[in-house]
Length: 161
Image (cartoon, rainbow, N blue to C red; front, side):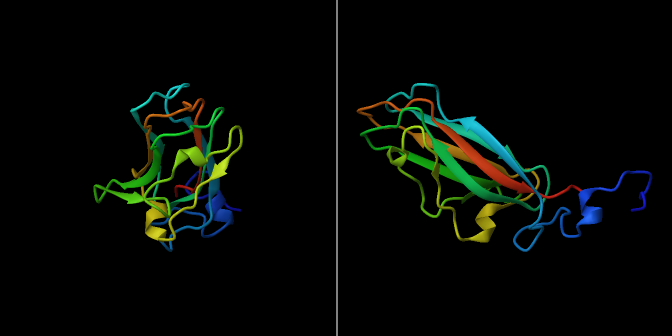
């Protein structure tokens, strides 16, 4: 493999299609990046809302592949919601990354991962440079306060050409 412009060849030089792409139909190949972020304090508080930025797309063509949620102690009781959005920086609008508007976090099994059902709308899962994957956890009056809640997102990131 020849060196272009004095640089070492990247993965996209070896695997065409791995380079940065834009939106649905953009790059489908890439490197899986996993990010795990605590969502809320170690012990959740009644009637509190926790908002977190999880991942910022470093280039066009990133794709949200999976989102998992787990907890050391699961929330019980109350009206609680967990939502994930893919904020489109260029359109200044949030796109719902889940198949439903939100998910009831009482559905998490203690000390096990729960995979979220993602949107079937491709545009909700593709990220361009500067887009942000966010989550919002709203806790109601819990009979058992959740502890140690964490989200793990798997995002496919193409090579920046």
